[in-house]
Each structure stands twice: as structure tokens, then as C-alpha cells.
Image 1 (cartoon, rainbow, N blue to C red):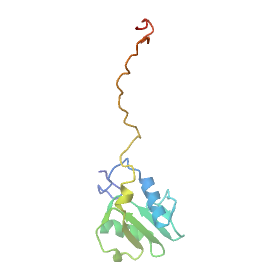
Image 2: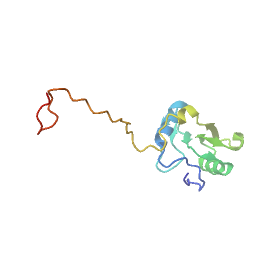
Image 3: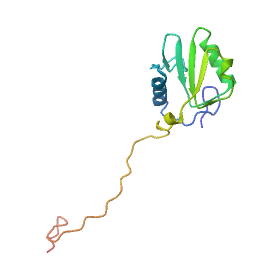
Image 4: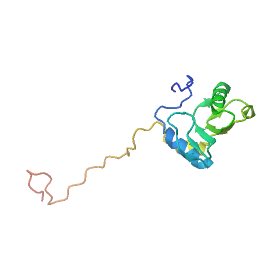
Amino acid sequence: MNACFYGSSGIADPALNAAMLAEAMCKLEGFTYAPSEEVFWMHGHSTEQDFIYVTTQFMSKEMLTRISDEVGPNRSLLICCTAFRCAPSQFPNLTLKKIPNAVLTRCEWGKDDYSLAVANLPPRPVEPGTQTSLFEEAQL
């Protein structure tokens, strides 16, 4: 676990494919995937004032309060996370939704390559009359 933007240790793995997860959730929820370079919680939008934020973090009340203040009263934000602890009705500009396990299991977590497991094959039997090396004569 690594420290996140808020200093908590809620990020599952630094090598997780967060972009793939955010894009999948945008598609599932009907949002256009368009991550902002300036605002960490803008992963996509459905309208000019309706945004989506996807995270694997546990969302505490303090974190949600800070995000709600940043979003402001004239915009809305769908937060897709793995868990949260508060009454979602406390934040009129936020909608909280848990990321479905079916989506989480489809993303590649902590993989740095796509190597295939290749088994070593047993040596091929030598057929009579076959030369096995450059300097040997064929076996008869």
C-alpha cells in the first residue's frame, strides 16, 4: 500500500492500471473518458457540469468533504470507489458508488509484463539415419 494524495495508505498498488479502470467505469456509467491534467478528480464527464472520479481508495468523510468543497455547488461528481464510510446524502453535489468486483477483477493489477508461461519440451528422439551434429556421421 502506498500513500495517496491525502496521505492515507489507501492505494492498492502503484503499478495498477488506473487508466484502464477509469476508462471502464466511464463507459459503464455513460461518461466520456477525458482525464484532466490539472484536477485529480476529473476522470471524465457526461455534461459540462457533471464529472466522474474513479479511485481504488477507501473514501473517508474528510476526503469526501474536501472533494465536495472543490467540486462546488454548481457541479456534480460521481465518485466510484472500492469503499466509503458516511451517509452519501451528506454531500448534495456528490454521488457515491462502489466499483463492481466484476470490473476490478478484469483490470491488470501489479503486472509489469504479459509474459507467457512456456514449458520446456523434452528432447526430440533421434531417428535412425539422422545426423545430430555438424561433426558427427549419421547413425545407421
